[in-house]
Length: 551
Ligand code: ISL
Image (cartoon, rainbow, N blue to C red; front, side, top):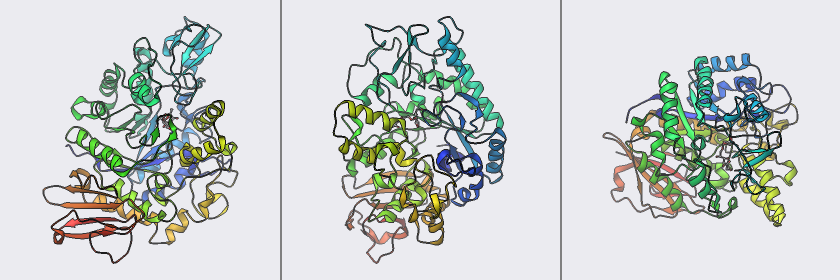
């Protein structure tokens, strides 16, 4: 595979409203990020991915954009942004922006125009349809509960929105829409940004005639009716040819409905579309038949299957993204680790996984100190639209709401959105005002300042393991092979090239593990681990991770 800077990079994702507030209004801002750039640099990461900071009425925390070229005054000014970019570059870091172009805000002027009349020049920027049998044009449901259509009486038609009703879907079939999107992209690239994370890019090509879904399984509806539409690759190729190929940048497309079969089509290098994708193989792994708010337990072998199958699919074809959390999911240590008794060990184990699988490493803010899920005592404290809508839907189905609150604790996107825990002072040093979303009260114990002091902390381990990855290109480009795959307690794999070989062993459990798979045990030496003990080379304490080097 070709070697490039973005394959070797570690990416740090910032959710700006929860990062650092400098104005006292309770919401993080751009100056807050500037203030923390030395901290970010100290982690050893290379690229910052900034979640949306554009003008937005914030029905979905900025993923509903009303002006793509303006910075939201909540976050700062255009000048602040320019300074951020300059300060990032002056530290040798790069910046990628969130590009949210499957939909706009309903306050975007294109949509405001489009609503006015059937012959408005912007009408065809969106999907307007007549109702059917006194209801919406088809039976599609939104990702956030309820119909994916909203009626508008001005023209007696419905418009399509796969997310909230305040996020109407753009009609990419219309070449004028695509040209406008390319202009926006060029605007930011000409300013010097280093690439894009493309929000739900898998959804931009809609099925002709928008047919009814014929399954009640929502994940299946996404796969078969919403995602990977017939023109998706035509659009991405056009975008690549007209915009992306003109710059030395990176792209990562986010994609519900991207699966093993269609995934490579987005990233195969010779196809010239995107560089990487975020698939949700492991992130939807615990969705039950009723979706995300009907969670089921997952076993380690299934989890390993996802990573193995994707590595197998992408090798020699395209490049992977290795992530275990972001602003849409529970905290990774609560979800895949043990956030109580083995908090420190399991957070470090997961960091090791992120840095030693094949693909670009993504770290979500706060994971580097092992931030955990939160459990607010009432639904009133939650903010996320997906959570609140799921709550309403459960209530209207007559569910037991005490039990549902427990599911919210486990699944809510707000788990990942509580403010960054900088120190043990008031509001964790995040703000001098009242935070827009309450803090996780465990900030007294889990915070950056405390972990800076403790050389055995999760934070120090992140710096260490990121540096380790950088020192060993075999961990980036080397081959990957899962070992002892059916083992329900251990995730072990080999990474190697012509000159070097590592075996990485993770004990994903609360008990000791003896791993007797390797025969030539004398050939290996341990070069890194997350816990000090005197166990033999192939014995691991709970949540212990070991990197062994072949002599
Ligand atoms: O959040 C999810 C699961 O709980 C996903 O289904 C998510 O909605 C999907 O991955 C798309 O996410 C992206 O687009 C959304 C936005 O709300 C998310 O924050 C964003 O990451 C709509 O723009």
